[in-house]
Length: 152
Image (cartoon, rainbow, N blue to C red; front, top):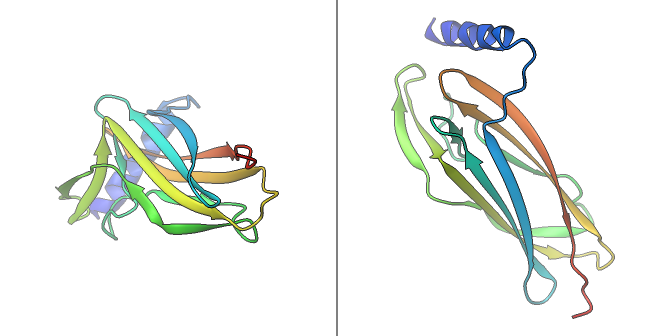
């Protein structure tokens, strides 16, 4: 029942917005060349005051977790380990009855990759995430990392 009420409130918040697109996270990216065909991809998010962004590792049954989708990975590069996150907070959500993991004010994600295709010019990544304040919104952002010259 509680989940239905929350969903209804979220839908009403969207309808009240009159198609206004709210974007409480401002993203910047960078790519750093490492040794032996490895690169470090970094996403930095500045989160508007009062908002929070859910982690990839938030509990199941709660808010939607952040999803990092590498679109052109196959045949081009391999990820080295999982996408790492900066410091998060954990708090109990009494509506969903789970501990949720989230970012406040800022978020940083890093992913090291190893190129398997030396002709690769760019890495395409999508972030799918949920941010909440008084209501929650789901967003998708697409990013393109241009591979620096490999002739160094």
